[in-house]
Amino acid sequence: MIQTNRARLCNQLVESYDELLRRLTRRFGSSDFAYETLHETFLRLDRVGEAADVRSPKDYIFRTAVNIAKDHKKAGRNRVSAAAVDAILDICDEAPGPAQIAEARSEIEAFTRAMAELSPRRREVLRKIAVEGRTAQEVATSLDVTTRTVEADLRYALTYCADRLSRKRVLRLGGPRPKS
Image (cartoon, rainbow, N blue to C red):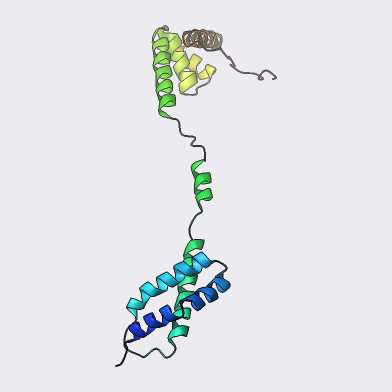
């Protein structure tokens, strides 16, 4: 009775299992890895066709196991280790969290209320200088007042808003910054 390739290969694997396991362990340095490779080899023997007769079943099985082991090692090199994943997940997220967003919104609302309590000219001076980035001279010209008046209005507006927000007032209208 003529055996099929698959049957011959399965029989050869069973007969030479211990020897193949030793050879693969020696080659790859791990008996667990050799065992897994032989198991995968057994599963792949189902795919062997009948087109050509396998001349040396033992060598065919060994070569198949080696190729499977190489494929597993190659795939393992492309994977990220668990330690690397943990390191990536520990990266600090600099985006504000929900609490920081809520606090910032609350401060903006408080600042808006404080600005609304200012006189129209002081509110306009603060908006044009602090928000629009205009100079005191430009604001003075547009409001038809002196630069000194604009600076006084700005100082008052900043002090008032800082007090309403319970903040320390830092005033730098121009000139050199204080040395720290």
